[in-house]
Image 1 (spheres, rainbow, N blue to C red):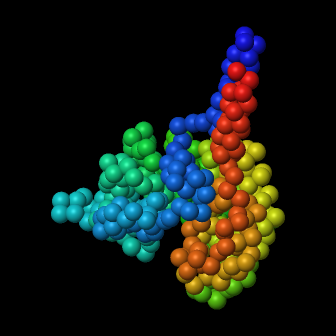
Image 2 (image 1 turned 120 degrees about the vertical axis):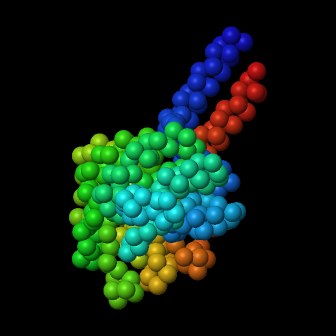
Image 3 (image 1 turned 180 degrees about the vertical axis):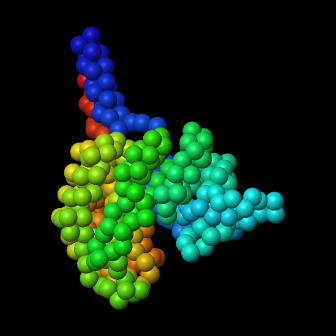
Length: 319
C-alpha cells in the first residue's frame, strides 16, 4: 500500500507539472472561452470597434467573442474635451472619435465578457498608449492582443508605419499580453492582385526579429488568407521555429471581403496546422465554405487531461 501511495503522488506531480508547463497569468482565448474546446477557429470577431455605438453593439452581442479596435493619435469628441491629441479608437484617415483608448479599456474591464485586440497604426499611437495599457492591464481579466504590422510584406507592399524593434521591445514589457505581429500586404480588389505569397525571406526575417528581441510572450502572426495558402510548409516552419523561442505561436488568418482565396487550400492549411493553432478572422461567407469538420482539435491541454483520466483509472484499479 505504501508503494502504491508513493506511486500515486509521483504520478500526480508529473501530471500537474506537465499540465502547467505553459501556466502563466496570460489570459489565453482558448481558456477564456472554454466552450470552443480548444478550437481557435470557432472564435468570432467584431471589427472596427472604434465608437461608443460600435462598442455597445459588440458587447451586447452573444455571438461576438473578440473586439478589434484601431488606435491612432487624434481628437476625442466631447463637450469639454481638450484639443490635444490622445490615443483614440479610430481607423485612418479618421482623426476624431467619441471613444478614447482609455474609455475602451475601462468599459471592457467593467464588462469582462469579451477579449480585445488593439491594432496600433503608428509609433506615436503606441508610445502614447503604453502608460494607459500598464494602468489597465492588471485589472483586465480578458485576453489582450497587441497588434501591429512590423515588416514589409508580399507583392511590393508598403513599408510599415511601426518601428519593428521599438514595438517588440516595448510591447514585450506590457505583461500578460499576446503579441500579434505581421507584415504589410498589397493584395486584393483594391490593387487588382490575386496572386502572391509570404516567401522564405519574409518568414525568415520575422523569426529573426523575434529571436533578436528575445520575445517570450506568446505570438500570433496575422497572415492574409489569399497569400498564406500558397506556402503551407512555410507557415508550418514559421510556427515551429517561433514556438521553440516563445513557447507558444499561432496564426491569425484574415481576409477582406473581396479577396481571392482558394478555399480548398485554406481548408488544407488549417487542417494541417490544427485548429488549436489557427484563429480564423475571415468574412462569414468564406468561413461557411470551409470544411473543418475533420480538422485536428486535440490540443496539449486536452491530451494531458486524457492522460490524467487514464492514469486515475489505472490507479483506481490498483488500489
